[in-house]
Image 1 (cartoon, rainbow, N blue to C red):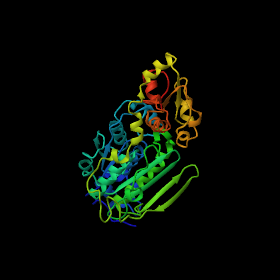
Image 2 (image 1 turned 120 degrees about the horizontal axis):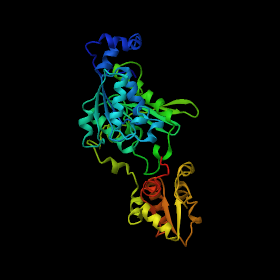
Image 3 (image 1 turned 90 degrees about the vertical axis):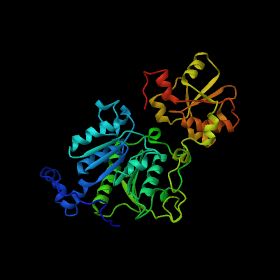
Length: 392
């Protein structure tokens, strides 16, 4: 559906701006009026990572007058494979500051506002209230539901994107004209069911594909041109190089934008999404050891069986000495239980401790009462025991 322009046009473009945006100005659907609207627009990008990088760069290049950046993290070397707004020289710097410098290097006429804090229920309304449109580049379900609910309550449109390995999705959610994120995904997946990009990986260039779609949709909504992805979900398969669309209808029973909403204020989104299941939390209570404890057990030749529950490609990157690989899914399907020793204590680990806690719950319910898992996983092991090994 075609929608009215989101923002009013600025009073004028300077001579320098006309030169800079000339290729926009000669597009009939954009023209002077559309470019003035972009100049007057205030857009907030949640995250300066994989999706935020191309989004911020192209929003800046397009001439969006004010860009806000919500980001509390620092640049890590593992980011550079996909987060192209940062460079080698930025490692260890604030991502928000690094992104700001890149944006201003692209377009010095952009006003950049930094929000160097974690987006949470107690600050999201005040931050979002300063902007016309939100671009969601987050990578976790708790923040996605937070962004959605805040936008619905504030009646603001936002452009959503999601990436994983070779797959991407994008849509525009605006409850005034169509569905919201909860209409598409009423409930988050069970904890541990959907791996994050940190666990499952992502093709770096996929970020550019989905990020550019997000910016295209943002420009269309701001300037009131074309047919934005309101009520449509764009699905991209990079391996097959296929795009397809799925219609998304507004759910009259939606908890936040439905006819009788039950969510009328922000909630505890970490609890709602459950990063770790209750069963895993209970299993890990009193059954979590540190990497240093594991090192002591290994040195003392304790009777233990160290099991790595990550995926084979992760195991190839780095591993704990003596650990054998049995992926998490083998435990969830029950295939691995029959091969576990009865005369040795089982010690589980994964990358950071989330997946191993889920597997620990399975073992506890199967009768392996003395099984434990390593808090911090192989990353903690490298940092505390073998710092010469790589992390990912």
